[in-house]
Amino acid sequence: MKPPRRVHKIRASVFFLILTVSLIPFSVGAFFRRTPVYQAGAVNIMCANTGLVLYENNQHTRHYPASLVKVMTALVVLENVDDLNETVYFSETAVTLPWYAASMGLRQGDTLTVWEALHGILLPSANEVARALAEHVAGSIDGFIVMMNDRARELGAYDTNFVNPCGLPGDGQHVTAYDMSLIMREAITHPVFVEIIGTASFAFPPSQRHPEGRTLRNTNRLVREGDDYYSHWVVGGKTGWIRAARNTLTTYSVQDNRGIIVTVLFTEEREDTFADTITLLSLGFTLLGEVPLHTVAQPRESGTATYTPDASVTTYLPGYYPPPPEEPADLPLDLHPSRSPWEQLASFTLILVQLLAVIAVLAGIGIIILFVRKRKSGGE
Image (cartoon, rainbow, N blue to C red):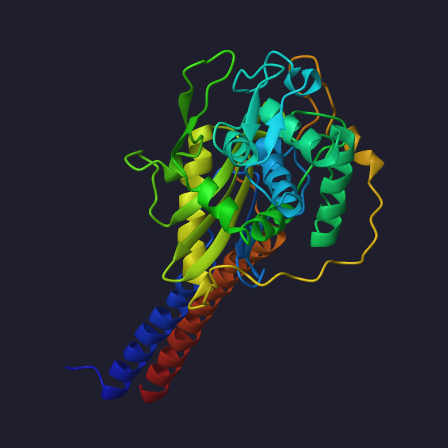
């Protein structure tokens, strides 16, 4: 004897109820799983043209910048030097560095043009070149640092403070991923800067230590064609490393006339900064959509907000310059990867929806079983 048609309808209703409710967690999960997997402790993805933040995680957490400082150094130089053929002289102060500092081996009395010096700080990340540029522009390193911090305030980088022009560790020197993207966004308004950061290698002129000159490569593997991490999307960027900062990288990239900036801070392995950046670039372009980027952005009006340095920052960013770096015990070491509050809320919401879906399915099945039993008992 075949079951009544009513029973078939009930079974079909149960099937579609279970199917519909079961798909809810997967739909919600797919929405929230756009979060990329990366190793950096703090990241920011910013639209290069509008300044819109497309994605962030811990973007306002202060970290040592390492050589990302040189982006601001280059910006201040380009804004204050009219002739890139001016000669930069290397003083004893400029070339006096701790033994562990990256350098081109330039000595007191050597010279470079501003054009060559900018390549020196942005490609091999030479610290003595950054110090020489600071003296050339401001007359002293201290005077240049004032210019750097004033410019940071004007750009709205209120969680940033510089204590040197090269990125060596020092009390109170810190940036955030958001601030670094702001600074990078301003720097790329200078075509000279954009050209230099995209240069894979540069032939430097003779010096006392290298009388025949030499060619040095860019530390940024994303712009070195043939490298495993080379990306044709990437226009250029700046790398950084000191023990306290771990590895850092800020990158400018263009795809189909759309531009974004990706900044990653506090990454344990150098390779992860490049891998993370490629992952975040893919996400950034997906989120950005069709937003046209002008070749050179229009200058923006300087901000007027005041800034009071937070002296407490040195309690978790201890300085140890000039002695060799040691591992600070109180820097955050558990940020690989960390999740922003909205990601934590998304995860909680997903679990809650899944739990409610299971309860709804069980309740629906129970009600239908009771209904069927009641109908059967009424017909006997």
